Image (cartoon, rainbow, N blue to C red; front, side, top):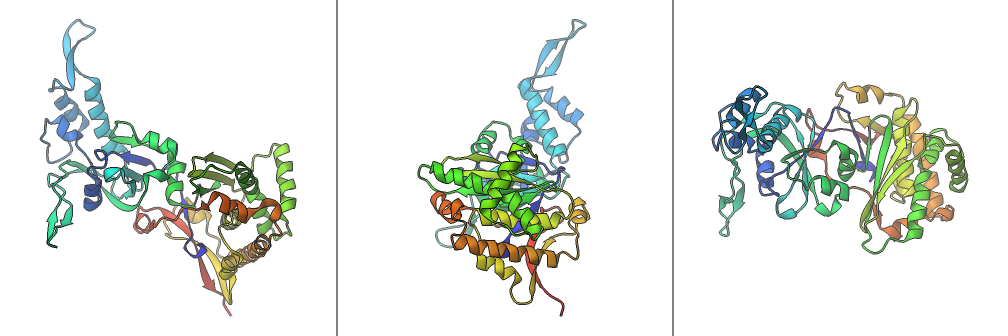
Amino acid sequence: MLQNLKIALLTKEQNVWFIRAEKGKYAKHFRAGGVIAIDHLERAYAGSAPSELPTEEFIKAQLLTHEKYSEFRDNTDGKESRKLTRSGFNVLNQIRRFANEIKSGDLIVTRNEKDDGYSFGICSDTVPYVDHAPIRVTTTKKDGTPGFERVVLDFKLRKRVIWGPSISRSELPGAVRKATSGQQTVTCLNNHKEKIFHLIYPFFTDGESLFFSNKIKTSHRVNAFAVGKLFQNVALIKSLSDALLNEESFDIGQLSLVIEHAILLGKSDVVTCQAEFMSPGDMWCRIPLVGEGIKGQVFASALACLLLTGQVSAAEIAGLTSNDSMPTLEVKKDAGDIFSDRYKTPALSQKLKTIAKAAASQAEKIEGHEGQDHEIIEVKNSLNLSVTRVDTDKLESFEFGINVLEIGKTHENR
C-alpha cells in the first residue's frame, strides 16, 4: 500500500460537477468521445443548432420565439411582451453554467449505464464547443467483426474531459446519492467535495488539514463496541503523528490520556470525524496540520492513520527505510502553485526516515498485542475495514489533472 500511496492536493478553485447522461444512457459516449455534452442548445433552437455557441443574448432571443419556453406577460406600462417561463430560464441557465462555470481542472462525475456506478473525469479545456458530428460507441459483433452500438449521442454543446476510474453506486454515501438524483443536467457538487474525493483517494489535503477515510465493508450489523474502539483509535491520530514527528517515546495507552485532556481543554487542533454506518458504510476523518513543515506532518499523519486502523504492517513500514533507501514524499507535478511551494523541503528525507522508523516500531508493538487496550487489529477485522483503492493515474497525468504527493524511495548518498 505505501509504495502506491497518493495524497491528493485540493485547491479551492477546483469545482466538482455532476453531469447527467440521460440516466447513464450516454455515459459510454462521454467516455468514448472524451467529452461531456448537453442538448440544451438544440432545445433553444428547436432541434437544430448553430455551428458556434451564440452569445447569451442570442440564445435568450431564440428561446423567446418558442411557446414552450416563453409566454406573454403584462409590463408595468400595461403592455404585453414575451417573457421566459421557468422552463426557458432553466434551459438558459444550464447552457450558461455548462459554458461559463465548468473549467479546466474541475472534477466531473457522471452516472454510468444500467445504474452501474459512476465515472470520474477532469475537464481538460475551459472553452466549450459545438460539434454536429455524432459520437458512436464501437462494439464487437457476434462474428467478431467491429461495429457500432445503436444508441448515438447527438448533443451538440460539448467540453473536453479526460476520463478516469469508475466506482460502484453502492460506494456512494447517501448524501451524494441524493445530490445526484435530481433532474438538473448540470449540478454543482461543491457542498459534497470532500466526500467525492474520499471516493477516489484514501488521503487528500487542502494544506490546512489531512483528510482520511475508512470503508466499513461488513454487511452484518455493526458491532457497537468495535465502532467505539475505532473512534477511540482515530482520536489518537494527531497525538501519535506529533509523537512521530518529535521523535518522542510514546505508548498508545498514554496517548489516550493526552487526547482526553485535550478534549477537556476544548483544544481545536483535534481529529474530527463523520460517519455513515450503513453496513457497508464510511468514516471520514480530518486531521489538522499546524505550523510549518507540512510535508513531515502529512507523512506522519498518514502513517498514524494507517497504523491506528490496522492497514499497514511493521514490515511494510520498515521497507521504506530498508538497506540504503530513504522514504520520500514528492509533489507529482511542479505546477508552480501554492502546494508546490508549500511542500518544497529538500532536506526532509532524513526526517521522513526517522518518522518511518518510529512508526515501524509502533507497528511491531501493535502486532505483538502490546497495544491490546485498543484492539486495533481486532477492530479492523470485526468491521472489515479497508481504504479506498482506485486507479487514479488518468486523472493526474496531464496539465490540468489532479496533483498528488507520492510516497517513494531514494538511495542515500554514500
